[in-house]
Length: 257
Image 1: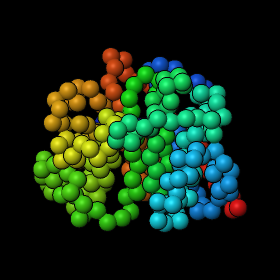
Image 2: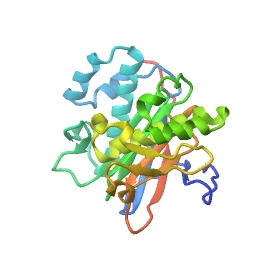
Image 3: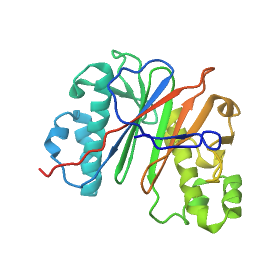
């Protein structure tokens, strides 16, 4: 069921029921999985992960983080197999200098990005433009982080906002920044304070300024709505034609092993 939004006020993305289709040029697909329970039949997901993905598991200290990693990477593989018509376990990734994954050169061009936090997993897919996506849990401490991640302009905007909307504003800014870094493929190699986004929850998302002036005309950012206790943002390359968004909600009630 589609969540109503007001397009004249804020460019949000809302969720629709999933359908089975290939992705045409000019569309951006976002797949969502909500993790309803902490337990799941992990062997089914482990079996489709690569050796490299298995090797990353010991580096995740908390058991919950390891389980979420297994589920998120498995969900990414399953989602991409929908478009590639390949077995999830056969999909091969290459990684950029800052760790952004891409499909191997043998695969058709398909841009994608993955984000997960607590109970939400999002995968964005496009056939013709670079994209980045981020989701963050909003029910946690945030006040000590603002001066570490925000530009002076963003801090000034945050401090002028009414107290009751500052939490929302902080996580709006954080998700926009993270999604932008992932879209440009720089990871944390691009200092967070060198670009500024609009934070006010009463206004639409926007990249206001960047150290690289070309970023402001090249990239667009939209808000993903309907996420319980989470904030989400999608960043993508601009084209002359506006993209069509298709958002598929694959809620998963995980069964105990």
